[in-house]
Length: 466
Ligand code: ADQ
Image (cartoon, rainbow, N blue to C red; front, top):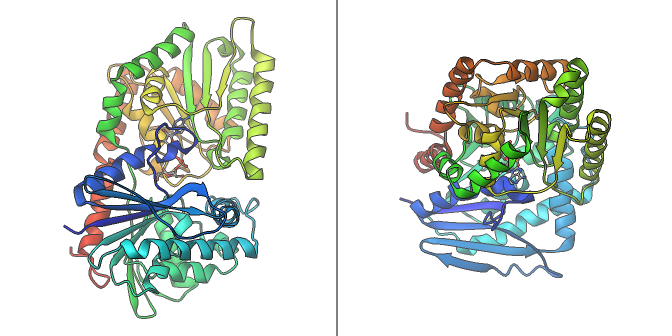
């Protein structure tokens, strides 16, 4: 078995899950994968240094090596806050109105990818498998190839790939995609994002694209692109949900929402998650059914993220304002319809919250996958499961067809789904949950990593064995 080298913007070994909670589930799974293969996880430490030296901080446990570098403040500004999170993130989530195109962002992005390549290269041996993660590091494969690396290199995009019409508004879009064609294997969350990518390659680059096999041939090199929907670490989550911490968290909700039905949303504070639209829909629901303001309590857990970026500060203000308006209009001395919490919790606590809430509301405007939807399903009590309301624009909707699928832009649609969920008979809840739960259990994170690494291991000259 080849050794694995994982490369991501941050190396996810968080002590507590907070704003960086998104890496929580992934961290466990990738660590498990690394233990199986032995290997290295390389990324930015999260710390800054006055002058970049490429010096590695290395820690080793068993067969796993964690190696990190520090970046300069200018790198963080241009590469991380700039190109990754103010250009690519909004554009790839169809928010061209928020995307900023500045040359220095692009230059910073190229510079940091080169810094990553320069720093990780000495750690790589000739038969290592290299797996690069996410939009921060799209050109990294090409940077490694330019150093003569012949290893098999794969890339997985955790976020959507936008339709060609949107993507071409990115200056130098051809160059970005050309760098991707230096990988051996490209992974996307869903067939929809994969198709958009293949389409771009065929139409804009003039590459030879085989839509059945995902083979893309361009400038004499063949890359295979496929969909690998990510899942959660199901067994770990179930174990966490049985912990004392989970039970205490469950009790906190049940105890504080007596005689009322609790509905929950757990999202990083990000405009892609559709939070203001969701609060509007809840307000609309209360307008339609004013008596329900005493029966339904909505709990929104939203840890701040990317706080240095203006659009993230704005979304936070807007959400506070909207939640405040509804609470101002609908609260009584003994009850508040919306509880809005700006902090992180452990996975165990989240599972307790999920289980105590009879409705899970997951309504992103656009989302590569959305793991919260899967966590909510996995944490339910099989004898009395809650109802998942899920945006049709989340990648997870492909697998979770038995959720109540909604259009997150339509307050009527979401308000109607809340009404249906509140009144859903136990038999129907169980029937839907059993199907959802099977999918979440089977398409779990271990299957995802095994599929991707298995394909990367066996791929040869752009061909995967049948
Ligand atoms: P994210 O956009 O961060 O991830 P998501 O998939 O929902 O979105 O993952 C969020 C994770 O953070 C979940 O595991 C959740 O439990 C955790 N989390 C959220 N709020 C938390 C809180 N208050 N405390 C602790 N933990 C919290 C990106 C893409 C997604 C894709 C994932 C994985 O945008 O579409 O599903 O990567 O590929």
